[in-house]
Length: 71
Image 1 (cartoon, one colour):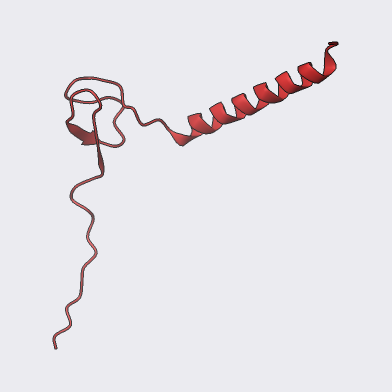
Image 2 (cartoon, rainbow, N blue to C red):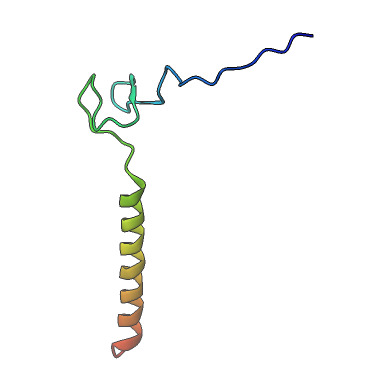
């Protein structure tokens, strides 16, 4: 039996996403589709995390106002 070594090479095809508007693929890090110039639909996780904190704080503020204000 001959054992062959597998060389780990860089992937020649970077990960791509499909455009929601034209259906063609483009690289993940692009801000817009190079084919139809539509904005990328993948958002950074940091913005999603900020939005979640904002919604949580807004809900907490509403709860405090519901309990504090007279009925």
